[in-house]
Image (tube, rainbow over all chains, first blue to last red):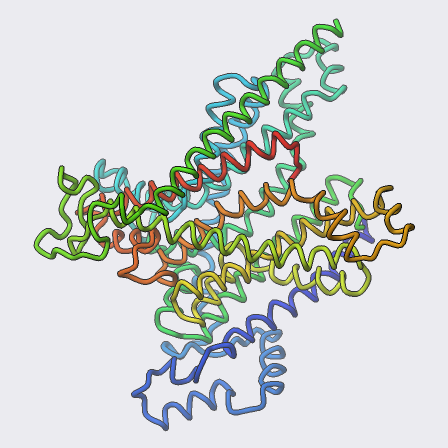
Length: 306
Length: 284
């Protein structure tokens, strides 16, 4: 277990350096002059030169790379071209909104999918099973950039129950959480179903039934508790992926998180801010995956690093 | 007692096969319908998808325009029909190129092993550290929006899953007796890979590619929705949704129909992938 965690950590750092390198390269892949792209062709030469110096683009690329890496490890991601505020502080301001949305989406997904998956597995090949699995396939196939507007049309425009956009009370977060959580919910219900089907066939379930325990105890306490390990892993791995889905969801609902900030950075060609957003989203994803892997090894000691 | 259990499992197996075949049939029918729509778009579409009629902007569906008209009075049905061309073209090209890259690199990684394998796998880890379409968003923001760049960005993201799949398959096949036999008879590495290993990884590759089509179509539409993909006036389902977003409150038909087209297409590929996987008994 300890060896697994140590080896997992050894894999974590090269990935972090790789991500930083790739993000650094993005700004250098811009065809033409990045400064002209950011400020426009008609900008004054003095402004262009100032920005070039501020971004360090006049230095050799190797120097730029090492400066970027050292600064990134210190938490200095440069300054936004438009607001002139430090990029890291700007992203930190937006982080709670994205975290709130992601956690609510996970909660909504778990509350819907796990009961659905358990009943589907218990009544395998019944109408309920087929119906819920069709719904989950539908959930994976509905793009969130369509589901979001549909929910707005139904619940905000036609019924007038929920606000169209923005961040505020509980009523504001319901539609964005459903939009973001639907795909996760579909994946989870399928995973819960298959995991529970395997678990219900195990001998310890037969033993529990033979002891005369009630079906509820057999299913929840004996089968589900053993089926939970793969389910928790999927929740962990997919939670990180939600950060990418948040870019679209936040854009639809004008949710003031990192996702919307990323799109704003693209639209205003604020490349230092864009670099920072991409970096923070990827690093959060890598860290969540690391924590999931370690928890997985903790809950299932049979896991070994190959 | 055992007989009852056997019978029960046989019925379960039978039900499972029927469900899988139904999925393949439904998914396959949707995709064939879409392919035909894309190929014969000029014959099927009632109007030119780029033809504007500003006096009829945002008109709701009627007998002349069954799905209504957009902001510039263009016929939405014709744009949805032509949009299938872009979605399928991007899907086929991205999945084709990504799987070709994946098969080549994955075979080398899995068969040769050692340092090459280690370097390739660490590079895959780095690409996989960018969740969802984040890497494609980053690439598009630098390269600028166009159809070619969408294909480049999605290939840059897509090859990894095929590489990992092929590598894992080759690793498990490499030690099998038929491969060891060819090796001991003096078969070259390229012959072993091309003639003996790759034919055995076709089934999981087909399943992965089918799901890959669904993922690619959603990713292309997502990029276009964000304004980073195919640009107007070209009719892409994602960019139609992006245009529709501005008129969500007064003209919801601009949003409903292109989204429905994306969902049905993706559902078709997911149905087909699910069905083939269960029939071929492939574990993903």
